[in-house]
Image (cartoon, rainbow, N blue to C red; front, top):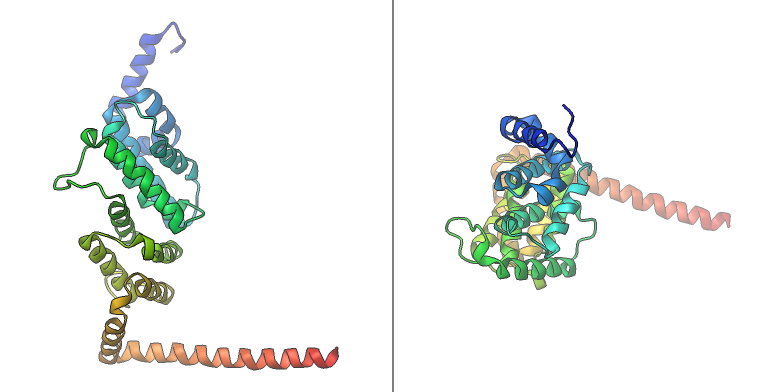
Length: 280
C-alpha cells in the first residue's frame, strides 16, 4: 500500500488499523509509547492516545527503576519538559494532573541533581500551572485542593510501596530526607502515609523484607523527617528485638563484626602511617 501525500485515505485507514484494532494489545501499547510519544502530543489530540501514553510511560519507567537503567530517560525528559513548558493545547489541559503525577513519581530517579531549592522551584511552577487550569483539570473524586508538595509525596510513597530494586529504594529513601525544614509536608494524611512506609522499611520481615542497607537508610531518613518520635521508635525497636531472639542475635553479630573490623582498620592505619613516617 503506497502511503503518499496523494493517498490520505489510505493513511487514515492505516491509523484506524493501528489505533483501533491493535490498541488493546499489550506489546503494541509499549512499542507505540516508545516511538510515538512525540506524535501523540503533536497530532494525536485524542484522549485515548493520551491515556495510552500515560500507561506505557509508567510501564517503561518501571522497567528502568527495577533494573537500575535509564534507557527511557528521553521520554521522561520529554514528559517533565512538556509539563513545565506552559504551552498547552486545549486537549492537553485535562491530563495536566496526570502528567504531574507521572513526573513526580519518577522525579527522584531520573533527576540527576536534586535539592530543596530545585524541588521548591518545581513545586512553585507546577502549583501555578495547575491552579491556573484548575477548571479544566480532571480532579480525582474526593480531591478539591491542589497542593503540589502533598501530591508529590503521595506519588513517591506509591512508588516506594511498589518497587523491589534495592539500589532504587535506597536512592528514594536518601532523597526523602529533603522533606524537612523548608519542605515540611503540610498534609497530616500525607505525613502519616510517608511515615508508615518508612517504618515498614525499618522493620525486618513482612511486608517488604528489606535488606539491612535499606533498613539503615530508612532509619536515618525517618529520624530526619520525623525527629520528634526518634526515642519512642528506638525503644519500640529494642523491645521487639528482645522478643525475637534470632533477629537480636543477628544484630549483635553484625555489630560485633563491624566493631572488630573498624578496630583492626584503625590499628592498621596507625601502624601504616607510623611505618611510612619512619621510612621518610
